Image 1 (spheres, rainbow, N blue to C red):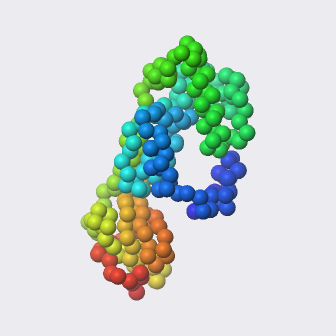
Image 2 (cartoon, rainbow, N blue to C red):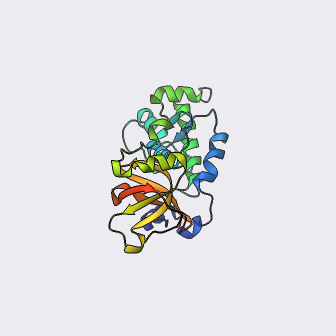
Image 3 (cartoon, rainbow, N blue to C red):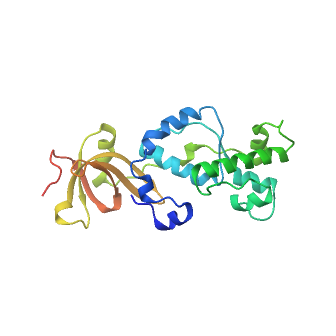
Amino acid sequence: MPVPRESSSIHQITTDMVKGRPKAADVLGRFFAFAAGTILVAHNAPFDAGMVGLELTRLRLPAPQNPILDSLKAARRIYPGGAHSLDALIGLVGLPQPDARHRAFGDAELVRHLVRRMVESLGGDERPLAALVEHAGPVDSLDKYLLPAPRLPPALQYLEEACRAGTKASVHLDGAGARKAQRVVLPRVCYEWSGVGYLEAFCPEEGQLRTFRLDKIVKAEPGASSGFLF
């Protein structure tokens, strides 16, 4: 999937830069093993947690039990009034200017410095991070960001069985070309995101994962052995 131009204009990351890079399935397990037993901190944490929750849902993985601290919410309570974006806080509390903004490492370093300043504001370096968590209010968790399973109509209920058993399904697509109106896939997961239901499935004919809107699938039934049915 190409990186949208409007996104590239912010973080300067292009489609060519992410080609061949590790996917979420390759790194999430290692990251949460590294972060086991820690508090995760992010600025505007619900956005990041939502992206992680989507990937955990797609991979059918349980949510790790790391508490999540939103440094944006904490900054609003500790420094009331004015703007609280990372860019605004650079000037407000004297944060060092990172080499690269809107990049993972640069922003993580910036949040690290922000957390240290907030801890200092609450009493100095001797105050543990727990004091900041207590001051900022209840921490969040990734459980609430796992995407719910959609309610499947009778014509699509075989997808639930296929996802669970790892069996093929023949899906009939609404409005597709004649050649692809009925295709055999290996369903992985169904989920609902922003009020829309999706099926993620492996397409043997294309040799890749595809995502289908459930409202574009007319019927699902046990799949044949061929890639396409005519």
